[in-house]
Amino acid sequence: MRTRFVFRRSRIALALVAFATLATGIVLRPAKSLKDFDQSFYLTIAYDIVHHSVFSNGVFDKINSSREAPPPGRYFGPVYPAFVVAAMKVDPSFARAVDCSVEANNEARDASECEAYARPMHVFHAAMLAIGVLAIALAAEVIFASAVMFWLAGGLATVALLADVDLFSFVMTESLTFSLYSVAALSLLAALKTPRFWKILVMGCLFGLLTLTRASYVVLALVVPVLFAVYDRSANAGWPQIARRLAVFAVGWMVVVSPWLVRNAMSVGHWGLTEEYGSATLIERFAYNDMGAREFLLAFPYCLPEVGPPLIGRAFGTAAMERFVYYTPHSFFHVGRAHRDKLVEAHGRLDPLIGGVVREELSRNWWRHLSVSVPLAWCGMWVGGWLGLALAPLFAAACVAAGRRSRWLFMIYAAPTVAMLCLHATVANQYTRYNLILIGPFSVGAAWLISRGMQYLADRYRSPHQSGPTQRTTDSTAGQ
Image 1 (cartoon, helix red, strand yellow):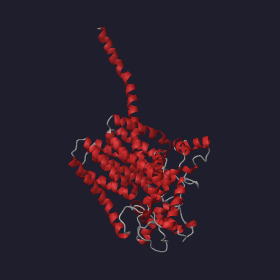
Image 2 (cartoon, rainbow, N blue to C red):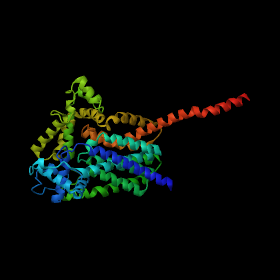
Image 3 (cartoon, rainbow, N blue to C red):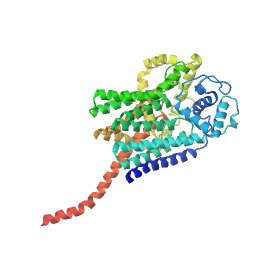
Image 4 (cartoon, helix red, strand yellow):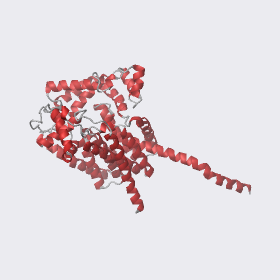
């Protein structure tokens, strides 16, 4: 009983330490206007829900929602805006700040009147990140059956997240996505170790909820069942048994996702998770196919966190990688965004066009698209700031060691994050904010190698001290 109490207390302690550390980092960041970055995407949807009871496309429809009700939309998933609405209900000051920001965006109010206040969302973000850290630590313990791994992986994940506290101070989805994925990945491990009906059902529900947070994670509805089937088959499970388990996963996923699909069919007139978002992102991604050979090669040192940009700037000039920086006028991002805006202006909607746009681009540049995805994936994987310089190489070494020692749980734990990294490089861009879920396997892999190194050093230190008496006894016996 006492062991179980200590066991639970350690979990609470890690969660509290992670929450306090990350909450402090977020709160200490300079206050952000609620109009900055992508915050208006989610705040406008929340505003429309509160004031018009409509889940809209937010800033992507042509209606001034400060004056009239917008039409229903499905550009973004419903999960994060629902939390913003909840925060508006709980904290009137935040509700007033959101109202002011949205109305200022619609030129119905002077922006100077608006308060830069998002404290309830900052607390929510810190809580979500702490839950994610706890899930990573538990995953490390499940994979390697070690209490040391729990603390090492949890500590590394917390420090890695500190590099992005400025990002988490914006009212955007990254903290929720990171948390939901980390918990879903933990549920995958739990279901693999003891594949009971309810565990697989919960796993399906969690991955469904993740899909409704960011639509790109729909890919994992295919990746995860394949991983599950491969692991089960390696454990000599029969195909009928595997099929039943995958059916349970599908039921759990559909239980969560289906209401959203039905709502879209009834309110918007189209089935599907989203509209326009995937098309817009892919059109912006095609701009990167114009990358030159020099930019291709320089991307590898340039994207090393903290050290890369100043190193390349000194050696080749600040303009050498100007197109990689999203806020510069001639960046790949802005070129792609301008092309997208022109298509919207000319045709109104992108989804009816996207098939033709993709065929035209890939018929000419399919090889460039694939090759350019390599440096984009390289750039996107360096999560964790300075710590990422150690985490990424240690993760690669851990994958090699895990393969040699048949640590398949670790490989399966890492595989979905690598799949998402490749997806983002192929259809989106190189920014690490989309790949924060790599912090989980990076921290677990690094913690494993560090713990093995610690054990090796402890054994080396202990060996001479233990062998002394034994050696003297042996010598004495030999003398006799």
